[in-house]
Length: 178
Image 1 (cartoon, helix red, strand yellow):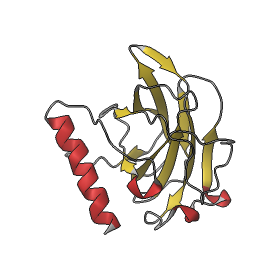
Image 2 (tube, rainbow, N blue to C red):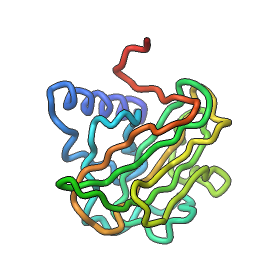
Image 3 (cartoon, rainbow, N blue to C red):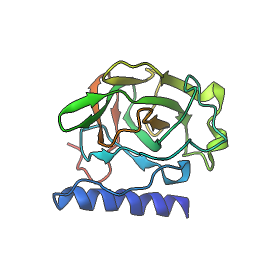
């Protein structure tokens, strides 16, 4: 059921993108509703606002607080490291978001309690813009990495993910591989 729910959400996002829309009104504030990203800058995701804290269960690493969480996952296509810029912006102004990334997993964990301390691969509670997440060079084809992005400032806007380097690549559902 969880896999089907993720597939339906992914297809809904892709349909919105194909029809020229931006993914708006999504509720990925809980791990079970995590959305797949492929870090190509599209679609943009609305930032979570007015949500007190992320759910209990995961080990949040460097995130001393977890306000306004948005959950995502990636699946590796080609092995190797992947450097992902995470940008929060509104009306052309960029601002800080924080994140924690866990992995690798051979399949998406059934629940957020599996996001343990020994699975944290990157974490940032820094005020730098953009925020940068690095999937490690040991990443292999088919592995999953889970990410929560928090909006400490509680500012409305959009969130985009772009690949800025590395030797690996991410699977992007709905795209034709060349």
